[in-house]
Image 1 (cartoon, rainbow, N blue to C red):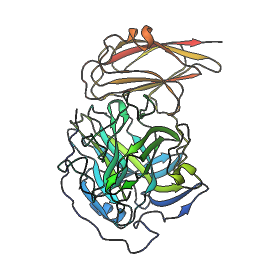
Image 2 (cartoon, rainbow, N blue to C red; image 1 turned 45 degrees about the horizontal axis):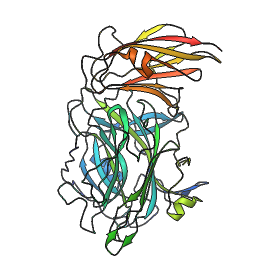
Image 3 (cartoon, rainbow, N blue to C red; image 1 turned 60 degrees about the horizontal axis):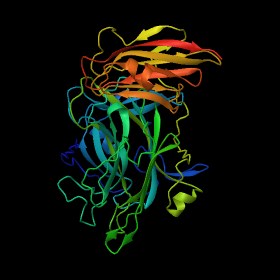
Image 4 (tube, rainbow, N blue to C red; image 1 turned 180 degrees about the horizontal axis):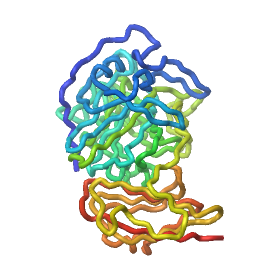
Length: 436
């Protein structure tokens, strides 16, 4: 299914910054240097009181030079990151609305400053009751503005046109690539997603509702021969410090004046209407460069095992749960034996006790684009043991054929991500504690 991207109109373009180090009235100064990085620009929303609406007036103060396609229903709220209270931006996708949320494009500085290699990191969390529509939605990524549009030739033929280096979340909150570039033989927009295609390094790259993440992107621009873009640009992505995505054949730009110069600050559902209000939270959007990173300095790819620790690393990665199970018992989805409502999410943390493991046996069913995930632990970066996606009328035959999953340690985490399906998903789980 092709996702249709409709630009409305630029509400305004604001003037140029006359001096550094400030990106805007409410950003961190550039050259904020840590042991292994230099921060170039940062938006942390700390200068706004909470709660309050986040309106166009806020955006005008926050970003110097930008294009706003749409906004509405967004707000500054209090949350906790790494056990510290902080103001964050809540971007709301309203129930019954298509393409609500936020879409703006901001230049780093003055519509002239750019980089041939740079990093973007931001903290992101999905509501614990987030409705992940089948069509998915957009999340922030690096750009070169002006980006190609659907009405323009794609791959773009104009050397003064940049690229879109953005991303999507899809059903189950799975990570997916979504770009407008000069790669030959590809129409725009195009996507390499998590289902078996080579660019995503893991087929279990999914976000858990209710958990703060750090997403980090690196883009290194391609070389140019004459007026032709060579296929040697790099796009790498880490979630927390684990690489999940790598491309090294990208054709981003066709003229040496075109640089990575902005962010597509976007978060909205791309197709269909949600049945409940679903929000994405963003904080600490940071443009930076690493210090002492030979691959970054030399324009080469990192080893896929390379741990990229960003300036805004999330150290508290504990999952959210609705139910805590410490005994051998049978638990079920809310309302059992009735089916769950559309967009219903639910999570269980099973604890087997010190030195033990936990086995969970499933019966029941799933429907539509609903997902069940089973994780080996209670941190968001613990491995996924198994999952079930979409229609399944008999879970007792799933998860390896016998409907059961066993942890390798003391904790097993089960959670659902439900989409627009109505009238089918329901299941029970029977827990067994295994002693040495």
